[in-house]
Image (tube, rainbow, N blue to C red; front, side, top):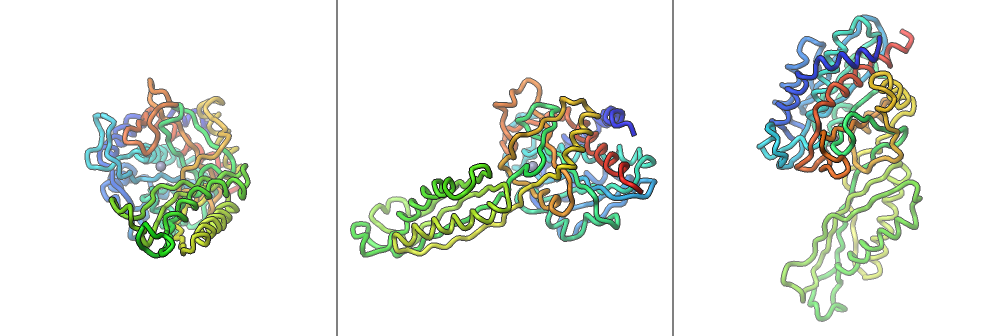
Length: 401
Ligand SMILES: [Zn+2]
């Protein structure tokens, strides 16, 4: 299999992929239930392989069998949009209050293109390819649900590798990027509730004010993180909301005060240690003021860890497909979360970013993924499709049958 030629062949699907991407973009759906999206996608891969559907969520696994026996590779696309009102001015902009602001519409089109490429060359394929069409990436752990339902096992054997691509509106068009080890954060958070006893604001010693310890805890968090956690294994804790008292009740001490924070970590060690630090800081502040505090931890995604071997393969394959300059070794992980992390804990593999800033837009100032003005250039569709298909061939054909 000549990978460079496979990359060129992906261009044949360019117009089809663009049309599908724009249709999907205009009609986004949110969450774990994406009936129209799944229908559109399955229509586009009809006849290419056997389709397995998820239970209780609109998920599908497409099994494309190679003509020679061998192992299995998993390729994954997500399908869900965000609850964002689009403001891009595109002629195919969404008007239903949801938006493909994270580029999952492009991922679907790329996976469809890859499915066609793989099916066309199935005579040269040693083994099977499973393509996941996954809902609920945005905070709903759709990947975990598909793993629970064993949708990675539809070929009858556990995949030897898993790959995914993610477009970014703020990276240079056509440039692939990733890194071995941690690429994306464990994204989670907590809600803290300080409970004192209410009273008259003129006589605080007769009550237990929950606001002062909350304020102290919020400010102490940042310095405690700095002193207790290794600076070379970064952690972000950011308070996103605070609630206490009511408007125009300056002379009232409320009974409770609450705040919520997002937490991003890049290692298992710090995912655990940060809980200890947060508890110590909040308990310390509560004790100082004689109130009680409770912490509710929110479900967290896992750190996305790339397998170094899979990254070496990605780098090599991208160079063969599109030239050496098409891959960028990222120096740092990014603090966003991604549920493909759960797949990569089960199956070694790689998650690769692909820049999609449109021509004439400066990537440095372009609206980022999740913005209601984010723009993704669909010229990158054949690049993503070619990459996914090539990774499947390269991985499977190198293994002994
Ligand atoms: Zn995304």
